Length: 119
Image (cartoon, rainbow, N blue to C red; front, side, top):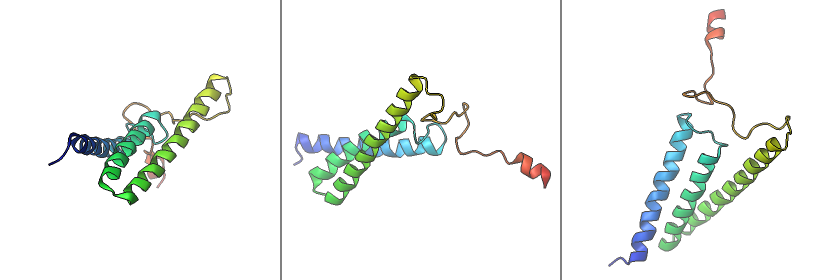
């Protein structure tokens, strides 16, 4: 019979799985950018939850992968924080951490109409 701890870790695993897939979907659909804080934070938390569930189940390769995923997230937080700090300090030559994307557009869309018109 599962204990309350088992139930909680399983629930955290499901929340982590849904969060990770949702973050990926948001980037794929162009709603978030891969270098943006919402994506990085969601991925970091999702990896932590999945790591907890994997550790409880003794699935050590998954634990290791999620620890690495979280380390990548920490590095991304540092890059985002440094970029915001530099922009706040008046350094105009520092690129933004997130590319400017108009509402409803994807950061990956390319307007090919001029090339088609020339053909």
